[in-house]
Amino acid sequence: MAVKLEFVQQPRATQALIDAWIMIKRSSTHILRNTDQLLGTFFQPIMFLVLFATVFGGSIEKALPPGVKYLDFLMAGIIVQTVAFGSTTTAIAVCNDLQKGIVDRFRSLPMNNLAVLTGHVVSDLLRNTISTLVMIVTGLVMGFRSSASLRDWLLITGILLLFTFSFSWLTAIVGIIAKSVEAVQWLTFVIIFPLTFASSAFVDPAHMPAGLRAFADNQPITQVIDAVRALILGTPIGNAGWISVGWSVAILLISIPVASILFRRKSTS
Amino acid sequence: MNAKKAITHNLRNYFNIFLRFFLMHGAVIVVPMKNDDVIQVQGLTKAYGKNKVLRGIDLTVQKGTMLALLGPNGAGKTTTVRILSTLLSYDEGSVQVSGHDVKAKPDEVRSVIGLTGQSAAIDEMLTGRENLIMMGRLYRLTKKSATERAQELLEQFDLVDAADRPAKTYSGGMRRRLDLAVSLIAAPPIIFLDEPTTGLDPRSRLAMWDIIKRLMAAGTTILLTTQYLEEADQLADRIVVIDGGKVIAEGTASQLKSKVGKDRLELTFKDEATHVAALQSLQKMVADSDDKEYELSVIINDTNKDVKKVLDKLDAARVPILSMTVHKPTLDDVFLSLTGKVKQKEDK
Image (cartoon, rainbow over all chains, first blue to last red; front, side):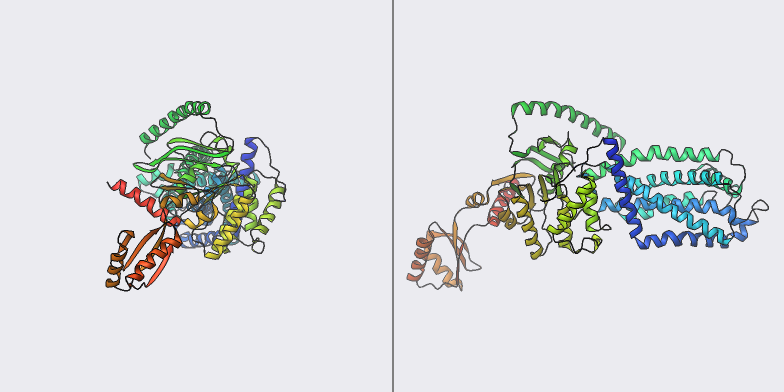
């Protein structure tokens, strides 16, 4: 061997950060090289927005407070729906890693193994940011206008990033538990689909049957949508902002340790 | 796993940690480790529920040598390697790699081992070079060292042309080479090779053997698992044969072969009449006979004398021979006789 090998000596915490950074770069490279998925990242939000706005717009606008355009109302809901569905890519990526031998390789290295999950979650955040930007630009083209100030937009960004981050950790658990990528797809679908439809995403829950309404009013996605919508439309935000942040933090506090334990257990059995 | 199970599982783990602490310290005093045994496994057991995969494996590997773990599918080879490389926990026994207990000091063990598993553990979306550099960084190499070492390995493993293509475009042989290169990125002194040539075409297998021989020449300690006797015979200094989670034989290739016994002369005849005539003329010399295939075999101690004796007898009785071979015991024979015996014992 001609090359003289030099090793880095750093405290454990610094090493863990470096490991996470290496894994984030890895997962982001996956996203950029997976052209099929990348196309979906661009076209799915456009399709959703155009379909919902044109199909439901005419009927639902009548039920909205006077002066509120359906497109402006829809924007918050469809952004949150898109990032909720987008967070499932974490589950697929985690499941893929576990199916192939690569996790064994990582575990045989003197690295922080949680970094594998962190890499997927953070790069998913990046992909979802692209989706959201595409959606906002499409909305603007279609006539979406907002009275939100720069401060409001920063708040919106913060709430959405935190929500996406927490949901990605949540779906990472699905990716660990599921036995195949197909299972991940339907599992995340049956979780995310009801959550996004039984919410304030597309219609006002006030017109839903009582039981469903109680669920819709109190579940995390509605809170996130209500907070973002209030900031976009310039209506009073009430407690929605704090409650949505609370939900995201609660999901994070539970799902990060659960995902780490399950990941370790799954990869050692 | 339900909550109750999880709690008992955890309690058992804590208990094990205490137990191991005492055992470990006791063991260190009673049996000081020999410096040249870099891998020491004693009484290793592992069960999945009621399915006992390992039933007490003992093995040692001396520094700079290669041990082949030989056994059929399901013998426990991969389980053993996964335990030695910290990927899997075990139930009882002690496992030391380079002087570190694999349960107590997994990170210390990980920094001195390289692992090449059965399925190529590489990132298919990344290029060969990116794979190498990434793994090098995770092994704690500096960026500069990782980059230089990656280039060196790409050259050594004949992957320079494909270095900047995603690994998913690689052939099976290239993937295995990249996989092995990845496990060598930090030049670990101990390498685990879990069936490194399974599923490779003959040419790729020879190329892999070449690489492994070079590693041995460089002084790397290697534990290789294989189902191919030829592979163990060709490469390993010592062979441990396992079956059903137990060691059933160990030694050098020639020691194992001598256990199976002597050379044999195998004779085939044209039809039943000549076969019977041959049996009558050779009488007690016949060690084994197959009436359907018109074959028989004679154990020979001295090739020249004994073969001549057989030929003289058959000539005298005017029995024509269809074909004749001298069969020297191969590791296949060792393997079949050993694993066969174990099966019979269990059946009784």
